[in-house]
Image (tube, rainbow, N blue to C red):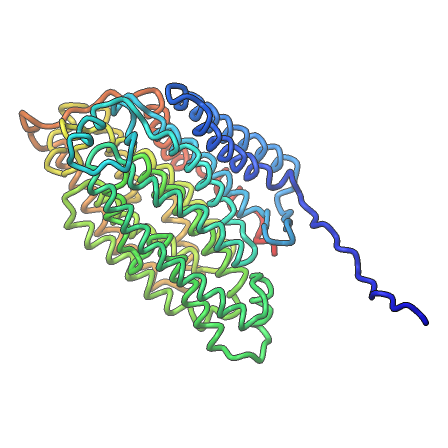
Length: 522
């Protein structure tokens, strides 16, 4: 009898991995894992120095690897790697460079221990706020050094998120960047109760947003039989499947993306979390998370759903208008500086959405440039906010900023310059960013939306000018807050943000040229 031979199977090929392309991400993830080991095996007295050194070296090393790769590859070249789950193209590289630079500035703010003795982060987050143990802990010099590996995990997740070539990889990256932020928001040394409240709100609303994203992913998989953006685009262009699955899935997916980008009306978490989180973490979220979220939005809209833009573009017009109006109008009513900057972020998200909806090279390059300018301006602004303090910690109520120019002319001048940049005044990066985004919108036939954006920008300028008038034309209270002399790390972060804001406002051509080279790979 003949023995039955098992069917021959084709050999399984190992995936082709371009390690040089994804080396910056691998460096950050490796540093995050080593940071976890430092927390386990290094003595408490030496952890801060070890974690700061490791984190700075990781970001600088990732930056060097990034520069080497960009230098060795032509501008228009793009590739996909890891079974086409990661797309390393020019928009992704621009976003990676932006994230690494912003991550460095945010890390400097996080690591500073001179403004607040022991740093902005509490030693034991489990102690109940308001107790004797809590007061003793606030006066101690201990610091929660787990924040450094958490920052590295979040930053690496952001880099994967804006380069993800399929929705499943994007969802995993979303969780990798979000979970550390949920934890870090609740670690404030001062005002612990509001800090923990903000962490809970962010976690609960973030869980809902992730559920929307995942449900949308499932519906799109049912429609296209794939989670890859290119396959979804091909199915949308010529599939006989029901469009109900396509647009229901797209709607749920976009809700999750808009939540992470703090676009109104999906902004409910933003003011509370910005106010309650430690200010260095607020700066990190406001700058880096915005870059990653809009990087993902640009890729999804352009690669996956551009062929169906006539069906969903009108809905996102309404979302952009809602975000601009909510941010500009409600920002007028705020009496807390951090909440005011939160509503400013919501208004800017609406402006960014104008560029994202253009779906043309000018819209892509303009939005990328806007993300770069907004990130550095916001980072420096929150760094400046952390310097105005009283006996209870940061003095963020607007009444406490009255006459600040007489107490610290330098800080008042720096904050004024940053507020003018957010308002879009010429010779600042904010003006150039708005100009290129709005120009792309007009070229794409969105003139009514651009007019509304200009009106919202004018309204938002009022609450920026209100703070400037308060600092320069009001008398300081005798028992008002003091301005803390910043340490080396905070000084470097603020200086970096101010210089980039100024340089990109005066000579923006080099950044615009880089943002305009190449398109998405898939």
